[in-house]
Amino acid sequence: RLSAALEYIKQQPFFEEIVPVLPRSAEPEWVQQIHTSRYMARAETACRRNSSHLDSLDVAISTRSFDVALQAAGGALELGDRVVSGALDNAFGLIRPPGHHAEQDMALGFCLFNNIAILARYLQKQHGLQKVLILDWDVHHGNGTQHTFEEDPSVFYVSLHQYPYYPGTGAVAETGKGRGRGATLNCPMPAGADDNDYQSAFTDRILPAVNAFGPEIVLISAGFDAHAADPLAQINLSTECYSWMSERMLEVADQHADGKLIALLEGGYDL
Image 1 (cartoon, one colour):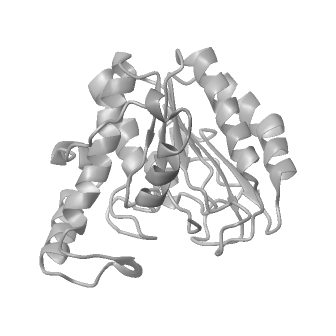
Image 2 (image 1 turned 120 degrees about the horizontal axis):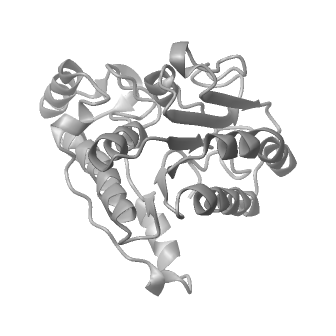
């Protein structure tokens, strides 16, 4: 997946404008802002022992999976440092494995560590940002991200996803809990939804809500499995719709966050 993306990017006229950033291995203390130390130890042990799976059959692992997952999370942190410092205007993290299904103490849906959740908390604790927006347009609801922040009013989680569909969470009634009530916005989409449905959700629900929130940085869980060409899901987005959504989020970032925006790769199964 990453090789296909890189080969395509190299053929584009904007390639020479891109600043490459190498990842670092995420420091355990930052991963443990989201995941328990017991889960980290269990994940590492399973990988070192060359187990075939972690927690469920949809999380296949190898001896290198733990180290690669730390690199993915660390790559996100490295982008956070660069964007907050102003060294980069915005950034896209071409990282694997994805992260938004990973729970505090459980791997799920190909995800070991919740990269975007780790990044959000890092931006708050390391860089002092107070209000973080996470927009998740992966076709699957980001259960792990929602559950991490559903009681936290400082992180606004917004998701567009096929529903009902894996993992079964993300109903419109799920709006957060306790102090975080109202800081979760789910926009479930029926099978067959298309560009018009997504753009209407943006215009009518998402943009008014995120502008009222006023984020200091915009984070995107950028899965591309809602594309019409994707073989697994049943949403029919065009490539142009992803561009349109990106432009709207860049406008939000320009208005509220001095342009600070970071997208991290999540799902997608068509190359």
